[in-house]
Length: 526
Image (spheres, rainbow, N blue to C red):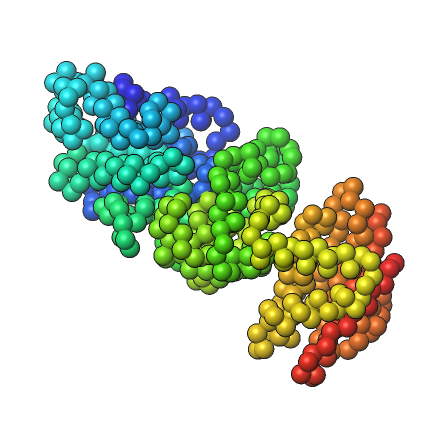
């Protein structure tokens, strides 16, 4: 048993000793690539989404230096027809790039990794010299054992993400990977490879710098989609086992929309946050406690046209359209706001609908992080929008109805296309934009049952916050007095009974037949 070559199955044993969600179906996906032109897979996903767990599982399954039957016989992979055919049948090359980085300077990393692999090979196989190349050492092991390698590379992009990585260091590392998986050695040495990280492989111009790998990203995971995060049925079992409400779990940690290879859209949960919440019994943001927020604010502060508008709309809970195809897959080559938003998608801050070409904040956990981040943004556009929203909230609370109407009219005229000006969903979006800083004080609810109808938008103060509750209606036509009368007659106030705070009914209307579309507001204190 070596350190990098055939390291055994102890890591996966530890995982199974804790509460474990069976993701062994991933093995079947890799098995189907063995010995084919699809043998090299690079699977990227956000941090704390189980990348290392998956790598340890694959390590334990393929390693010919151990017997892993007791670990896998009770898992889903045991029902696969090819289960026994591949179990413990390969040499394994396991590389955790962050582990190498802890033991080497960044500028000499690539050479250090190569030396360590050859040294490990020489320790286990007497016919190998410590001065041999990696290619020669691995080829000799294949010849001696009659078994090809399955390569497993965890956190491959740690070098690309490292703040001290120069372009020269990045090129050297990519060249090391190229040399390891050149076509002349791949067929001879590797039965398969599984490489994982946060970022897709860095582009050389418009092409992947390691073109032999097939890439599966958070934008297009294909057959790997069910293994990116936890599926709902898996989370239901976790909640039942731990006595945790599934509705609350869904609100906080669900929402990453992925497209499967069959074109089906599935929604997955953040695995780390689900397990932490079930363990501690507390629903809160565990995102900041991971390093997934690595430098995010620095990118949000970049001065690109449209980035401030994007942050405002996303924070307000709206979708925002952006293109992902021109992203260079690193942390330095930014040219547009789209590049920044694509990076935030790979980091897990946003989920992207490839059919719509638009992203949004996936769940309550990430909305909390955005709400905190937005106040630390320093570029002028976002700061101006932030102040406008805060003034708008203050005007509502102070009962400045004319100011409220004026502000909503400004946002409405600016943001709504003529075709959708009177659309009900568009009207809700206007309110969300005007109130986009609400998370400092409020929880927002939509379509809230009340009395004999439904409240369009309700803003309820957070626990211990002295702000008044607000029920808001924006209507095309009629007067605000008539809208307030409807809110009273339908007993909208019943939706927030027992809250223990003051309640404001806020009615905003506009004349849809008037070209100027003047807006009017009435605020009633209950």
